[in-house]
Amino acid sequence: MRHLHWFTNDLRLHDNPALASHVAADSLLCVYLMPRPRPWCNLVGLGAQRDRFLRESLQCLRNSLNALGQDLMVLEGSPELVLPDLVSRFAITEVSTSFAPGYYERRTLEHLTRKLSVPLQVHRGNSLFLEHELPFPLADLPGVFSPFRRKVEHLVVSGPKPATIRLPPTPSGQFDAIPPATGKRDPALPLPGGREAGLRRLRQFIFDEESITRYKETRNCLDGMDGSSTLSPWLANGCLSVREVAHTIFDFERQRVANDSTYWLFFELLWREFFFWRAVVDDRQLFRFGGQSGQRRQCCFDPRTFARWCAGDTDYPLVNALMHQLVATGWMSNRGRQIAASSLINELNGDWRFGAAFFEKHLIDYDVGSNYGNWQYIAGVGSDPRGGRHFNLEKQARDHDPEGLFVQKWWGETPGQPLHAVDAADWPIEGGT
View (cartoon, rainbow, N blue to C red):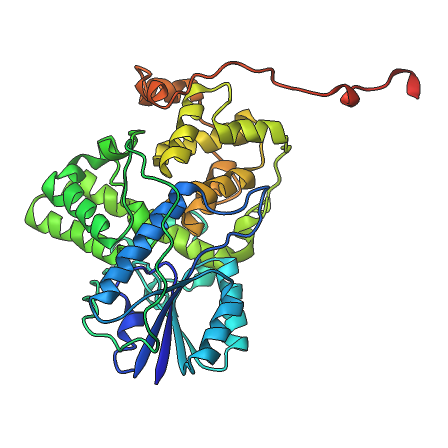
């Protein structure tokens, strides 16, 4: 038996049932295909920090595989073309992958199921619950978070499986090195990719510093390590299993203390779970202007205004600082994302999908369900029962940056510009000619 495992958002050996299924194979080819985001909303490719974090995570995974006598083949190209070629070249008898929600992910799996000449096994994804463990069929998945939370928060979260300690050999010799990232870690938030770094941060935040006990009060802090757990990058790339994060919380509550803040970190995992399953159900609607609601709001696309928002060159210093932080570090706090999204949608009257695409390009914790689901939430076309959120930017600055230190750190003050700029050819011609 010659097996192939296609890594996607499961860059770990720990709690990876797909890898465990290959122990008895004669050989195992481990493959990762670099993401190639489709041209979308005038954007293409990965931002420097997202690319950097991903490549560091892949190198960490490769080191772990090497310790078991395995290796990782990292290739460019679409799964629909590359995987059938590998199956033929290495005489593969079975292909496996881990489930990832999303319309394009679903289409890819359907295509591979038809095109591959061997079975394709899809194992559970990085979620707290399996579909059959949910207390409702997916067709009845609540459209908003609160009913979902009430139905699932008391369910038993299965424990993570131990790491695979033995794997079959590769069917080939040594693979090419993973090309290094061109982007460098920003010293303001130097989050390294890979499981080892994720485990260090998990241990530090919960047990070593006990920051989890204050999380509910500090989670809206705009700077990364000051209040947020910052676990999302390692969760999004699958360096950490969401079940092991949940059970680390449970262990802390049993061994140390349980309070509103320790629950709140689990509460955030439930939000992530909600968007995971909404991405499955919403499918293509996750990317549509009207979202799952089908509602339409009046907006326009002004390239200059969108470019100013992307560059952090608006008339709103806090928004500018947040956008500079995002591009420089690949990260932005949850509160910051809400503020930046609200400004594009409400102050600048922009199309929310363009903002979501910009976040997709740059966020080191990009996750299709959470990213697009949260943008729909702010735009009022998704899971917010109140029909969207409009943040008062002056109040947000007073509440979360009262001394202006964040704006100063991320150079949010920029020269003012006219609201509109037109060329002479854009002026109307008088006289009806």
